[in-house]
Amino acid sequence: MAAISEEKRGKIEKEAREILKKFSSALAKVKIPKMETKKEVGGFREEGEGKKGDEDFRKRMFANASEKDGEHIIAEKKTW
View 1 (tube, rainbow, N blue to C red):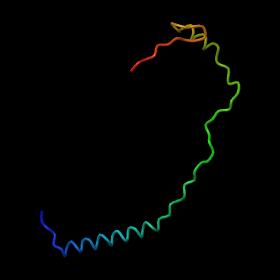
View 2 (view 1 turned 135 degrees about the vertical axis):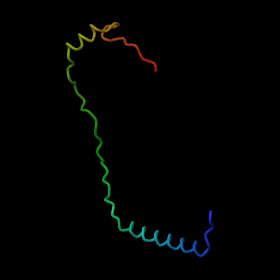
View 3 (view 1 turned 90 degrees about the vertical axis):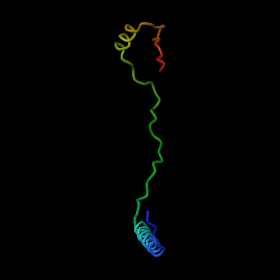
View 4 (view 1 turned 45 degrees about the vertical axis):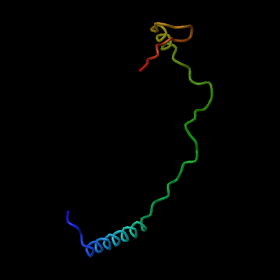
């Protein structure tokens, strides 16, 4: 690899500083719009009675369940 002379090195450093100075002045002119933050909290449901479930679906699910305990279906838990 060829060595760079001190004169050439100084010239490269001077060019690099000029490029950085131009770049920083160009960045100073850039205007970024201020981001507005949402202050309200959402995603909560209203408490109440809720919707009535489909009785036909419930009957079919319990009819197909191999193990059940009164009002609960006993299901196997998968271990991965």
